[in-house]
Length: 212
Image (cartoon, rainbow, N blue to C red; front, top):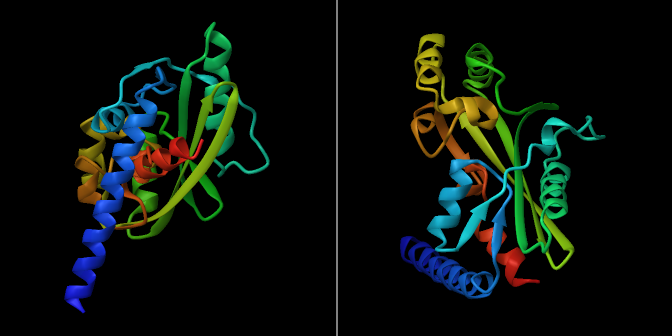
């Protein structure tokens, strides 16, 4: 019933809020390094109210293809290890990587505007997966997780894709769209974790930190 659904939603909201409060208390005791230049991930950290600073790793540019190019966790781990090796006294380090998966094809960030348009045209009117891997390093130990969500793009023409790409927004996004901003107009539905589609599954990361 609507009443039972409302009650379940309220209960879930309370649990998420409590989880975020606990996460803030635990993480705030540690200096946090975010191994990402992504403004979306930085915004997510600020939304959690957590103090952090950024150390950018370009390690994914150097990694050879793994057994599973659709698996984002190895790149997230590599980013954390790269930053940990560059810091004398490694604090808590969070690294993440997001891959858009269309069937068996892994779609990362576009190489240029033309590539972004072709990627969007390829994804339109279809469903694809967004896989985000996260690695958390504390005191030399690394914990990992992955969150997968399903996204269906609406039908749109090439002109629409070109106009969106011309804004510059999608050029730093896996799959060539940002679901939290202008790219939302190209999306029909999201099933799963919206923050994971953005590239930083906030609740899952909080659980990972609390569980340590």
